[in-house]
Length: 110
Image (cartoon, rainbow, N blue to C red):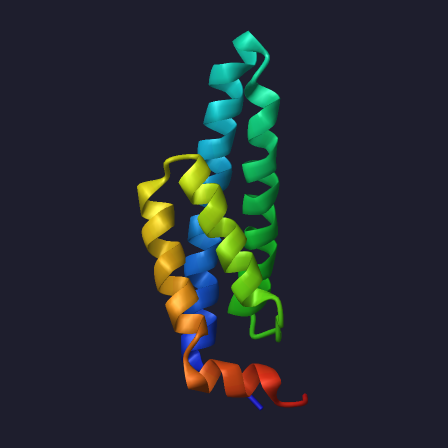
C-alpha cells in the first residue's frame, strides 16, 4: 500500500526544517564556543539530525511510527534555536501527521 501524499509531503517539510535546525544549531555552536557554552547547542543539533533522518525516510515512503515524536523533537530544537521558519514547519508537520489518513496508514500492517 502506498503512503498518503500528506505523509510524504510532511516528510519533505521535516527535511527542510531539520536542515534549518542543524544550520541554526551550528551557528549557535560557533558563536558561543568562545565562552565554552557552544557545546550545549549540540543537543538541538542532534535533534535536528534525527528529524532529518526521519523526514528523509518519510519522504521516501518508509513507514516511520515515531514520526510525530521526531516532529515534536524538531519543534523543541527550533524553539531552542529561535528558528521561526522551523517552528512554523514543525507545527504544520505535527498537525498533518495527526490526520486520520496518516494515522490509519501508520497503524495498518505492511
